[in-house]
Length: 549
Image (cartoon, one colour):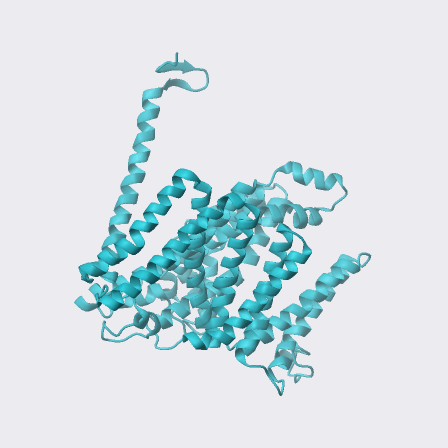
């Protein structure tokens, strides 16, 4: 029989009652925090979406066509096959999150970067990457230093030309243009949607082919890749018939249709017992379509939501009814891309060095302590650092995409390093010893054994860090980023705003009853939705990584 209390050497007096009380105290504190956050989000969402302004018939219609069938099917799947329910829920989540990311990508390719520019730089990167892969595969006897120099030279020539930035410094004119410049100067250029099919559809089809080949065989992979590419091309042709221009149609097909079809098809083939779970997304989609048709035909008015198409596609206005978040959304996207490009390679490289190469000395222990301390420094301090380093010392203009991205990259860099180190540290040491025992070098072990095993954890930590950066306001205020912009930035040197800054401006500079009850809640809902989408990707990656262990 278990005792309620006892004394054990090294632990002192142990009491089950105290342990149980402590456990329930922690559970209560967690529930209080979650309930308080839920109530806050409900209040904000109610002000932004205003569900009670809809007609009672609208609520009743969607209750009968969507809520009741979805609840019934979900309960039946939960009782019969929980794994099938998980498949259906994952499919719905994949569609919702990929739609959000596709909207951001469409914004970039329509208003910020032309499809020609994207294709040119994609091609300029693909050529040297292919050359480096071929060099790595076939030049086995070439020294590492020689291969590294060749790789740097190939990338330099492809992206910058001859003499490139060195010529700008020395005053020498450009002799050979970069690959990107050569592509953009071609006399005959395909239309935009064809360029996007080549730059987005082909890589997506290659990934689908790889995925299908892993599940079945090479022939199935080629067939799946061909179908994916054909589907993307068909979307561009068929899009205008349903009111979607070819460019956003290609983006939707590439980022929503292809991943969803690949996930559903692959899961249905590899796990046939879970196919019944696809009934859940069918019920949800069918319920939404049927409900919309019924409320339209019966004349039931829906909620007078402030989060609508006008709010998402309009710029700021002094009138809260006409105010929109479009330039701030585009600015946040550009900032996150810049932050990821600057922080991910540096953070992962530092983590690899500290975990796999650095000796255990007083200096490295000093670095460890300071990295941990830097992760807890207030964000406003990083704003001051960015102001002093990039603006005052380097003389760069304030509030630009590059300066804002660099400042936020400094903010999340310690978090990226810590999460990457934890992921690398979680790789069993037996795998390293086995690699060394087979004659592999340390670099080969890191590249072939450690990083592939740790990469999901590294990616999860990076996405969560980016989620923190996208909600920061203080660093952007300190570097002089404008609170309000009326157009999207089109270059790294352009002024940039962000969603938190825009919401802050509505709540302070334009403080009024209308902004407090309309624009501010709508902006918060959009910002929280983006954060939840990014965090959901991190959660899925973490769960997949844990299930593969």
